[in-house]
Length: 306
Image 1 (tube, rainbow, N blue to C red):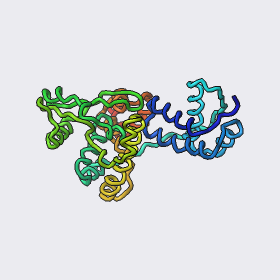
Image 2: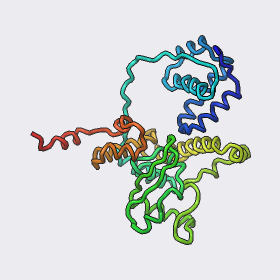
Image 3: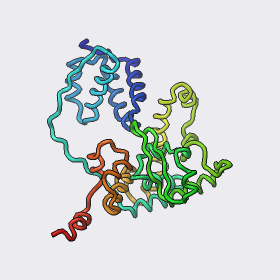
Image 4: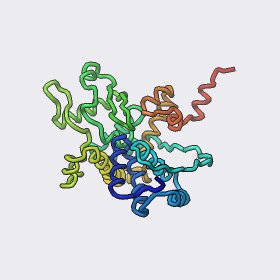
């Protein structure tokens, strides 16, 4: 088949397929915009349309959407093949932005409760959390029974992040703060263990008859939209209104994760393999982008070597 008809039914099928494949929320959002644009502006997909789109696309993520459609067709036995020429242009090395820890402390101090605690979780759990992971944090994912015995560092299982689970550490002080938060909320059971849903509940902001029906009919779709809405709400009501005002400039929340990873690698000498596990990266080369090596570490490593 040389042409693929682009209609709403196919668009919805591709979205559902992406959900079933556990595409991350940020990918769903980024790819979704280009995908809707392609379907809105074209009735069919064929060789001429593909070549025109490739000339118009200015970002690699837009090109990736065509590869996504090709993969969908292949996995669902749709007899449509498209040839996408490879790009030989050398990609520039990504630069990872960090921020001073003192600024992160100011952010935390300026945020209203309990979102100051959410910022602490993003920065201090493991090698730093993705914001979507912090939004989906559940009380039941923490190993509270073990922690109540040791009262040392705790542990939490990050569920289904980029299609995988990982178990990572939580500093002792943060575990104590989270436990006090659960106590204040009155969600301890008869064994003094926190129980319930998500730590930071955005349901009060994310309401409406449509959302209620969607949760009943398509829970996976509801989860994606919930995380997307929660992030926008957090971005505007916490970061913009409080944190950015306090530090005096725009904040990229992912910089907290970059900063934490760099801090652990550069100052605490955490091995890169451990850092990879804490961050949840499949490829260690991705971790190496996060772990910025300072001149101080280079000189320290070479000290005493003749």
